[in-house]
Image (cartoon, helix red, strand yellow):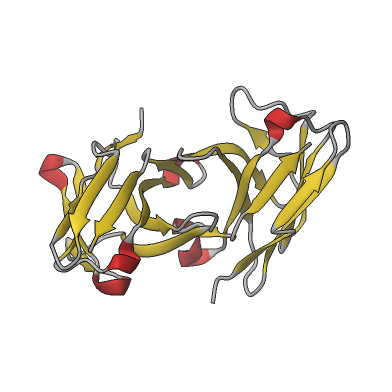
Length: 117
Length: 114
């Protein structure tokens, strides 16, 4: 149980275009979803936290107009990188927390490798 | 402020040798503690977790960790390392008081030599 999927696993886009990454909880209701960014050989950096039906809370230094997060249902959150530039190339990982005892944990997706050319 | 420290950036061990990866945390309340492993280009896999109770927790792949409140530590151990254990290891603290935000350590890269 507690499986989180991400789509796509890899995406290449041209500079100036937008790209959307989906994060789905497959077998539980995710009241909270988190988006992380990871640069090579580095740890995960929390970008934002989103609760279903509410606006996302962004970490300091993360541009909310560039990284649009939508959490419209209890099983789906999306991250849209708008007007992507090569410096946005990174590994993006989502995670989800459920209800009850599931609130103690975050279940991580497999990640999405974004390359902006 | 909450923080997690993994003092060892990189560790090299011989296959069959024992392993200990260090993790120290700073958190005002009782923490929820986790160890994850990440292979190159992959997501995070949960090795083990501590919420409460027995301070020695067993995880997958033969890993165990011990919570020591007095030392604010949650070190990961394995008695005999396999070549397939080579990966990046992350310690994390779950902070329930802040919407279950996780604080990750900087990671320890493990190399296993034959």
